[in-house]
Amino acid sequence: MPKVVELTTRLDCNPDEIWARVQTSQVLQHITAPILRFVPIDKDGFPEVWRAGEYRAQMYLFGLVPMGWQAIAISFPDSEGSTRFLRDNGYSPMIKRWDHWIMIAPTADGAATQYTDRVTVDAGMLTPLIAMFAKAFYGHRQRRWRGLVKSNFAALNG
Image 1 (cartoon, one colour):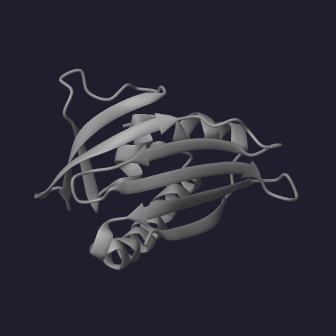
Image 2 (cartoon, one colour; image 1 turned 90 degrees about the vertical axis):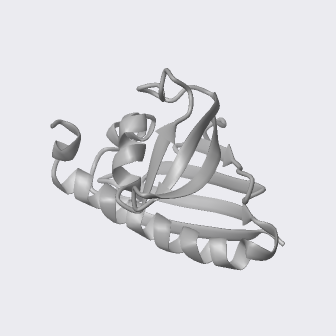
């Protein structure tokens, strides 16, 4: 039975800036480190800016332990009001469904961004374990996002 994990954080940055950054493969690599490292299987690598389509990557836990390949299946569902979406409807041999939605919206006061990760996981009998990992992983990603914003994205410029 699939499980849903959802975490939300406030990013003290304009939603347009966050939206532009979330669409880059550079940010994916930064916010997932050091827990996961994604190495593109395609010899051309990941695009600088994600386009709708499927990309395959080898995944490494802590940058060293091979975890097999993962499909990153990017789409951009229509906005709902001021909320924008990036969807990765991914999968792998171990995980039948890793349906990750990133939601970017202005905070109620309009002064910052409400950033939400919501993932639906289906990994058969491993689903509870994978969902626990997802909760910790997305918590880590959101901490990395807050650090990026606080540093004015300095880690991406060097």
